[in-house]
Amino acid sequence: MSNPVERARILIVDDEPFNLEILGEHLLDEGYEVVTADDGEAAWNLLTRDAAFDAILLDRMMPRMDGMALLARLKQQAEFEHVPVIMQTAVGAAENVREGLAAGAYYYLIKPFQRDMLLAIVAAAVSFHREKKQLEAQLSAQASTYRLLKSGEFHFQTLDEARQLTLLLSNACPEPQRVALGLSELLVNAVEHGNLGISYGEKTTLLQQGRWHDEVESRLSHPDYHHRHVCVRFIRDNEHLHFEIEDQGAGFDWQPFLEFSPERAFDPHGRGISMARMLSFDVVEYQGRGNRVIARVKLH
Image (tube, rainbow, N blue to C red; front, side, top):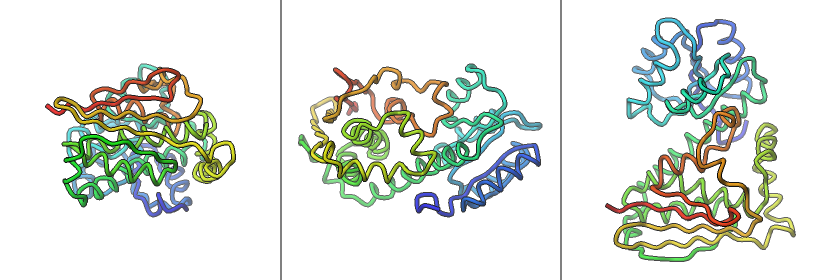
């Protein structure tokens, strides 16, 4: 199993013993630590004693406390608010998915599901959770002198450089942890979908096959892409922090990604831009053919 999800803890909540057994076997075989609960009430009692989970795989229809009721409780508690919830359900209607998305379930699985899709969704949720925790830890260790930064222009090429720049520029903001996750998503998008030309469909396939990181590294050294860089301009004025991110790719149809739609709820990615708008920035505005984005944070 790859390092980002090694020994991640997953809570499975389902009232069907067969589902608990099958889901548990798939995740245990992949190297996850698995804890199970047979309904929402049992899961809540367990979580109040042990909150250390990287993701929660949650059935929607259950007795005593159903999945939506448990999800509502989770989102009201600070210690659970950002633990990713994967809603598994036999109900695939758009209105049901939209209800779950609005409540904070950004990952979805429709029964019956394929093992590869299950593992891809769980890996994406765990990676999101751990990336957020890592950014928070690194941000708390950085000096606040970055907040003296008034303006700057930065050029980078790799995902590691994107993460380093995320830490620097987030620390220039009054709420670094709020900005960090969304900024990281925008910078990573500029590399993978912008400069490296990895399409949405290609990334879905690569994630399911466990080959995404290898493909990124391969394209970074390819003659068609190795010269490309992302330019980031940062400006602080009296009212806003402005981030201008421009890649050298062909652009993309960005409008469908401003809102997180039910049609993409079953994919292991595709949440970055909408989550940046909802959680990190007051404004996210793509321009032209989609290779330039402006993000703003209000200072007051």
